[in-house]
Amino acid sequence: MKPELQRRVQRYGWDYSSPYYEKGWEHQLWSSQKRLLEAINFKEGEAVLDISCGTGLVTFPVAEAIGSSGQITGIDWSEKMIGYAREEAEKRGLQNVNFSHMDAEQLDFAEDSFDVALNSLGAMYYPDPDKAFREMYRVLKPEGRAGALVWGRRKECGWADIFPIMDRRVKSEVCPLFFQLGTGKTLQKAFESAGFQYVTLDRFSVKLSYPNDEEAIIGAFLGGAVALAYRKFDEQIKEEVHSEYIESIKPFYNGSAYEIPGEFVIALGIK
Image (tube, rainbow, N blue to C red; front, top):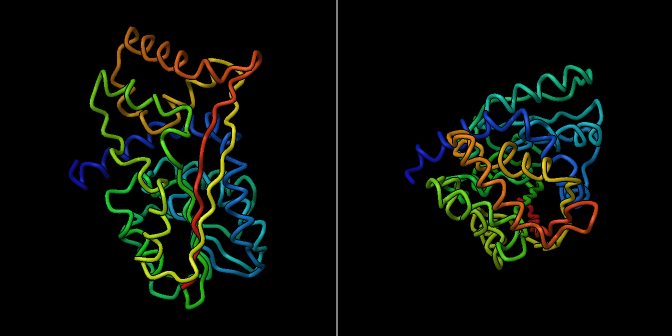
């Protein structure tokens, strides 16, 4: 897929999924996101950039950690995601948070602007993640810290059949290399290639819990990466893909909920 087309697919796909994203993923992703935040170890008063911030699931905990003397800027390619995040920041009365619509591969910030930059589960969707990591490096201050979280290996992610299920009906082309960054030391090498020093890698597994078929379907089809392609299906096709997906995750049903395995990788580095 050409880069500009991939950007459009991502932008409008996440716009469409934004109303469902938190219901489908907030609880399921928190343990891995919390692990990223604990590894970065934010300090009061720091200037932080949250790249691909979505609805602010990571942004708001960081805002609390850095206190009123700090400042966090969240950027995302989906304007609707940004809209939800702004509304939530206003509800919470936060003064140390701001959001901007921006491309991760072309950050509109000067060099040496931030103490910390993080990217939680965004890099898999970029046309050129290496360029995005170089931009992350550029906007950090000397000795600034960076952290990124990505999905791990396909074979370790129990929900991964969603992609072939969709592709049998329509070539969704969400991200043909979705799991590449989480394979081997790919993410570590990408950080090192961008210029980061003392890069470490943390690979770990979690269980994504869904209490019933309905919530598993919301996460997979409405709140996730295939939302734009799914939107084009008629009701019969939707029922077919729902059935196939539920069948694919049935081995992870424990009698009361789905406990779907997921693998994640965290990279940390210093400028």
